[in-house]
Image (cartoon, rainbow, N blue to C red; front, side):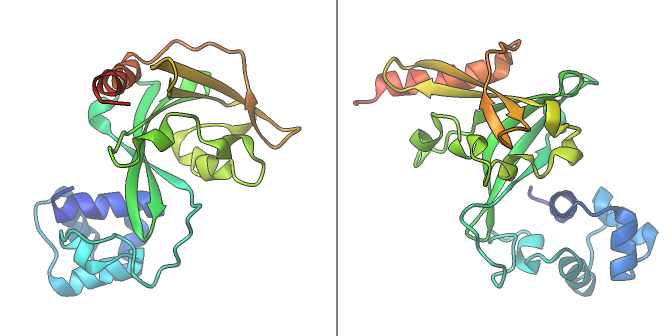
Length: 225
């Protein structure tokens, strides 16, 4: 996200705010705001301040600086939810949608997962984005999924990605550290336990996600253990 237009669109997606709401909140005309979103014109500083205030974000981030998106005054919660940002270039077809799962951490949005949603089957596939400094933490499925008090950090944004909680299936592409092979964990939502439980369902694998795991496995086999 290198342009102001991209950052405005991203922040609106994170905040789940529509253009008509931004026009109402900022007083900027619909035509002017459309030109900002398209990138035809960059807003002047006074308009940037209005946009940043309406979205509750850091104006310096909005202007392209390498700083957290959240205002420094925002509360930091180490166990926070994920927001799903649509990655159009990875769109597979009309019923399959790809996202990046961003976690809010220490006042910044960190890309943590690639998310693939098959809307027709109400299933989500998750593969970690391996950041070298903490890749190992993501080889196994996130334990929050199987805990009633915390599974919602993954599901709070379900409505925006057209998932239905009650019948949802989640598949996590991880790595068995002993065998250095891909390990697929399958989960189904249990209304009785109010969290996800292990499932025996076997999905049609997402080839792109399998390749991501294979690349990480290849790296692990080359480095000293």
